[in-house]
Length: 304
Image (tube, rainbow, N blue to C red; front, side, top):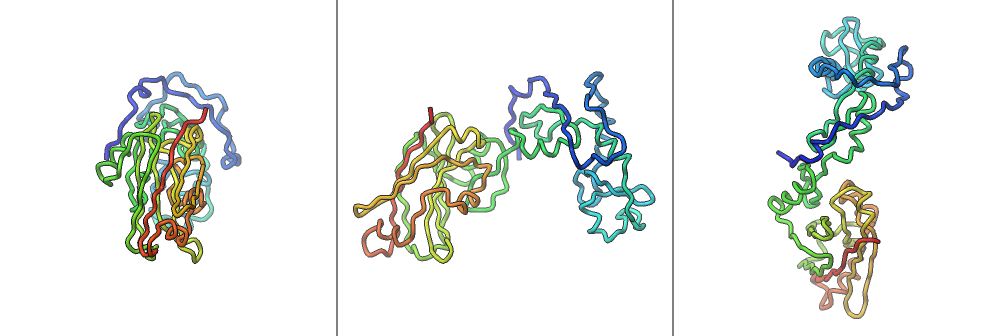
């Protein structure tokens, strides 16, 4: 799957990040100088070869202290050591408790680009700081916000908007106000309720409106909430309101949209939205209460 790249950012000069302190490597006998020289540039092919030595042969992930080795010098990460029952996965010799301090010190001397470089991150990070940075990198791709299936697609916002429209057939709307009607023939089948998602484009941003049914303890309820297609810092610049009612009654919710960095399940399970008990939803629906007919209205605005 190809995701869009940020060409403008790619032209920017690489950002050099000062090495961070890491308590996990404090027991290594020699420490790398806090000042990292950036000229001349390191040999890329050599750095790549050393980087490959730091891949665990079992899980294939990068190794961090303590790095273990057998008497023949074969290495593996601390997480995989219990899984191999104290036997080297390469030569089958007993592992013991030998630390590979040399490889740990070599790792501390490395500077590597962020793995999200293709998404626009031009930072270069010390090996032991790289993992933490990547977990918080502002350029890291977003997961698909579609809630009706376990979609594994990731990408930047423009790519995901196209994906939602073309692959999930999500309704796309322009504007900051909405008026939606949700109808379900058998509202008692809460566990089979369909997740509904609509995407709104306003203020140069995209927002996802969710409406779904779930069990709150033993009680079946419906919930509606809004998510922002971007990071949490940007999401806090916006607010929204939701309203549902009928038969002279009304429920109103006002809140701040959650970033799609938070999964729809996390938002739902924190009850951060308009929650409607099923009996109340059926009362709003009117008639003989055998069919769910809810009209949810709302608006989005930008805080000053």
